[in-house]
Picture 1: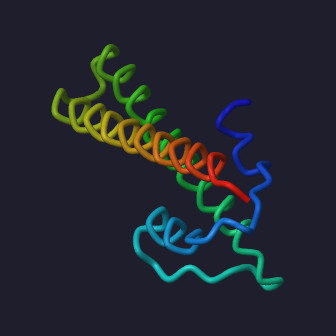
Picture 2 (picture 1 turned 120 degrees about the vertical axis):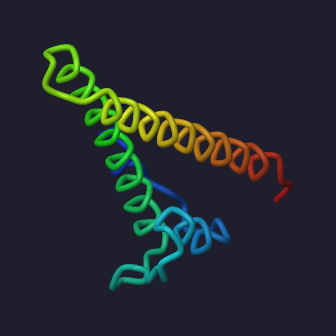
Amino acid sequence: MGIGGIGALQFKPALGGADGATNLLQGGAAATPAAGGDVAASFADALSQAASKTVGTLENAEKMSIQALKGDADTRQVVDAVMDAQQALQTAVAIRDKIVSAYLEVSRMAI
């Protein structure tokens, strides 16, 4: 499953605290569930948007690097784009690690 497939994931609404995670992913903005009150759908949407932004940042860095090889971009522009891409990738990996950790913790809970 690639990055584009994140939006198709089905999350269980029984997970408490999904609102806080959605707020975090949306940069602290107030998250409101969809009209049907489905917090899981808004969380999946937030993950999808975050993944799309990360991919866009990585693509921008790649384009800037190619432009630099052609002599059309300044070194500073390339460095800025690559640093932004590195930060976005590190953030995506940290979020993934937190999601996996939370899933493992929930899966160990006795019901």
